[in-house]
Amino acid sequence: MGMTMDFDRGTILLRNVKDPLNCMIFDPRVNAYRAPAYMYARIASQYPDVEDRVFEKSQKIKFSHSETLRAYQKKAISKWKENGFSGTIVLPTAAGKTHIGIEAIRLLSNSVLVVAPTIELIQQWRTKLEKVFGIKVGQIGGGEKTFLPVTVSTYDSAFLMAETLGNKFKLVIFDEVHHLASDQYLNIAKMFASPYRLGLTATYERTDLLHEKLEEYMGGKIFEMGYEELEDYLADFSIIRIPVELNDEEEEEYRTNREIFLRYIRRERIRLKGPWDFEKFIMRSWNPEGREALLAWRRSREIAFSARVKIDTVRYVLSRHRGEKTIIFTEDTDTAYLISREFLVPALTYLTPGPERKEYLDMFREGKVTVLATSRVLDEGVDVPDATIGIVLSGSGSARQYRQRLGRILRPGSEKKAVLYEIVTKSTSEYATSSRRRKGVPNRSDDS
DNA sequence: TTGACTCAACATCCTTTGCTACAA
DNA sequence: TTGTAGGTTTCCATGTTGAGTCA
Image (cartoon, rainbow, N blue to C red; front, side):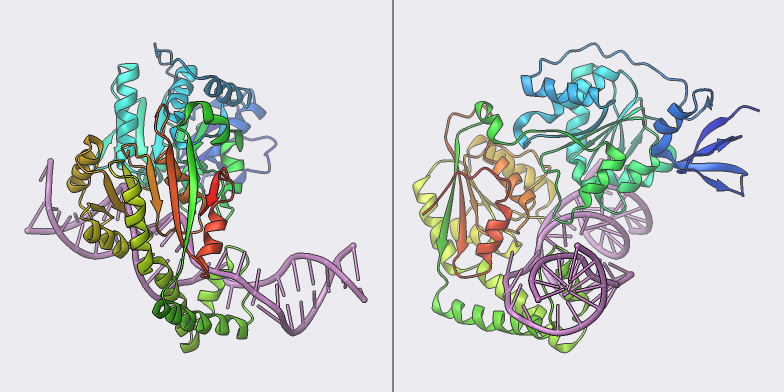
């Protein structure tokens, strides 16, 4: 009796195993060994004589198209090849990650699933792939369930259908692969048998360090290039931090609230150091004092975010760049709408319905409006027309968000010098937050 | 198909000096 | 002695999105 290998709802089922590997667990219900599907390639190479029924007989697809790649893109691809067609490539937003994906697909000429976080992104991939290869591309997610040898899908749908999709694609490409590291989505990587894997992102590292888990499933980071090395291709840019002062009233209120918060954590001996410590604080705050401290912290943050003087500073910056395309980023929706009312510009938040969003973005592209106020919606995923000026009015300490926002004003081939302004309230915790997020981003700042 | 809901998942949320037990 | 690591598995709130349901 020869050994056989089948795909069974996200696992590999192995029968007649003589010497099982560590990753295999005996399942008495079916009298066979099981291993997570992602181990497929490793198992297959361990047992050359196995009868492999995991994938349907391989359907080589001919993709007649060759991309002309830039030098660094070629290098990235060859690294991926050297690594056995697996691993993650890290490139800034504007560096043409799609081209790399297309080249990867052409290279393997096999069934492929492209996974991306939003419907908009998978549609972009779909359109692009259909155009480049001249084929029909399937889509799973966003109300569709058409399954073809080349298919795009959202993370959500790929997760929901991993049991049935896991043995259909030899290659999986994860766009914005840092999402894959989260709890549920990681199951996609585990339940897919695909031996070839490509991750793409501009921001691999996560503050919660979960990206370390991607090593096992995606083959780790194999190529990285930052903004500095891309200089030749990108618009010239600079970063200017503008410190502003709270007015007396705000200062007073900020202090009061800050005190309440600090007093509590000092008394409870809560240290806020790592990214998980804040969770602990929340967990331990199931009491009136804790709640009060939490609310106070929230209030103080709010004050720093929406300081009156920031509005005036925005006015000043706008006057210096009249007519240039400008995006104003905020952390909360209220401030985005405040800016919208104050300067009579459109505001884009998660509350803005789809068609309206499109309309605003079109107007911005055509230059009918030159200023957009937005919360976090434009941070990732959406195809935003190029802007040359960015104003970060408030933001989190996330380096990812910061880079993404910077990426919004750094499109290749642009002649104009791009400027990112950061308006930060002095003597509040916002200053530290600002420094935290700047880690790993080229330091081209002049504080003024 | 659209449009409204609801629900679930994800991401961020931080900066400082205090205590205790253990390892080097 | 001096340094350093250090247990709750979950979720105060807000923002954002995708999937699913039902009219």
